[in-house]
Image (tube, rainbow, N blue to C red):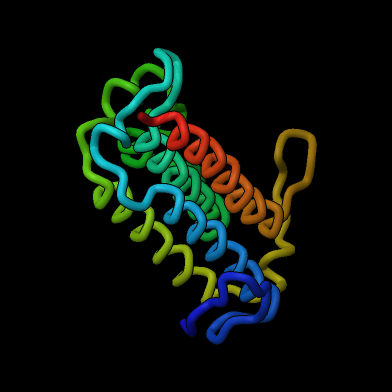
Length: 172
């Protein structure tokens, strides 16, 4: 893949026009997330603002897990497997189990998981075309297409990146 510009929503080599634009947006969201966590220590990644909050580390894994879930939904047209649920269920749900189990990891642990999942996303998107973005499925009583699902993935990351920035600002 060619280097994606951080500030242009544009086509990208190796992708169809609209898929390439989506890749530009995913890239920007990820770059801004990485900037928000640069240099954080284990203690900072594990910090809980209050007993019911999520740590920055948990939010990073949650971002990765959500993307993996949408890979299953859009690329493989399936729900998460039992194995995937066992590995990622607590992370997707967050809450008490995630607070207890997601701690003690260096930043590289979280960045590796984000990168590994993103590499799969980019490889799979390179196999898709613009028409694939329009493929629809049901979501409750509504129709939802792949374009919206991946729009959700990037807005979901940006939302949690905002939480991460707020948490980082409160660190002492």
